[in-house]
Image (tube, rainbow, N blue to C red):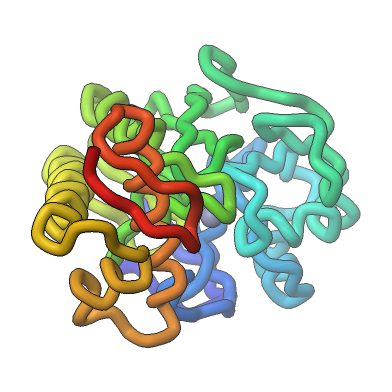
Length: 275
Ligand SMILES: [Zn+2]
């Protein structure tokens, strides 16, 4: 298995290398994955957290003048904060879903149907909202490797939180869309390469559908219920620091169900019930 030691570049395929940032946590697993695509001309996917040593490791793995593009799967800080430091070191062009971001200098907005073409590769751009409104996935044509950012992860389920731009209905639609692609491997934003994409996406879909069913079941059995009580009943194995996030996920499920006319409730703090 390729090395996941922070700062040590490892080759995942003829065209792809990975450098793991040293920001491990409950939310980031072993740390954020930064991917380098191409040899002659390099696209860096997600520079990671703002850490000078991590940026040095990326530049060291690529040779600075070869880094032509910085691609952002989304603008959450653990994926994007190192952007300006990496641009300073390389002069790369920054590509993301939106040019209007208060924290970042984005040179070009990209979305569905766009491609990034290096001398040896083509990356297809897909807009994949759900985890975040501005989320993009990138499909490497030559190897059918899919870079999923925080939409699909290894070792944990993705967070769909209303507080950080998450939308459960969009997230499920995105998973359905990715499921239809011909993909040989998934390179996630956190964790190891996923060797069986269809099985993993099916598992993700099943997990979300089960959660939705469980939430409806809780409301059915208990009547009007607060989100904190739903969390206490359903997330019994979840470590304490993640319970707040679990609450936001339940909220995201409830907003989807409300849009479908199945539940009623006002906001994250209110009481929710079936209609
Ligand atoms: Zn994220």
